[in-house]
Image (tube, rainbow, N blue to C red; front, side, top):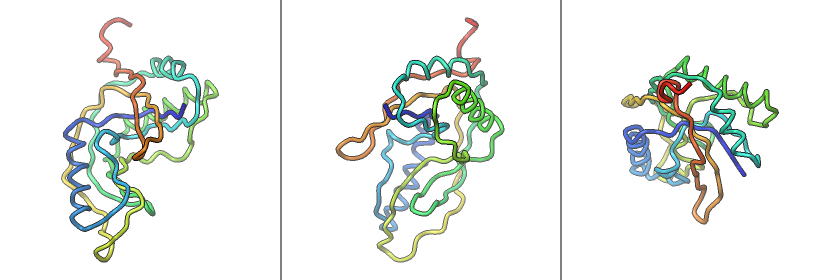
Length: 177
């Protein structure tokens, strides 16, 4: 199974991402646009791994409090347009903790430097002149209250992401611990 750990965006943040995509379409930019249901922030890409239940167990060990996440900029890595996030110590600590737990258990994951972004468009084709200049956007925020284990499969019309389970933040778990 092809797996990754992510933060799923709330509806307001998804709407902002969709508005940016609409702006790109109005500029007659073609490409592989991320569908609304696939908009997310990847925290750790695991790749092929056959025991999702084990990963969910490990995620239960990670302690984090709910924290704000602010999407505030647009950027481009080569052939990928993205929406980026304000620096967040809570987010960076969460990613470090996830990667530490995975590493300690010998679960392979992509060790590239973490760059908090949501993919908006892959392989753009600029049909109406030059490509747009990345920049700021109207900031939108959400409160991160859970992390999700996702399964990625290739469908007829692109990738399909399915949530296999999620783990709430400490305060969201109640007083059971």
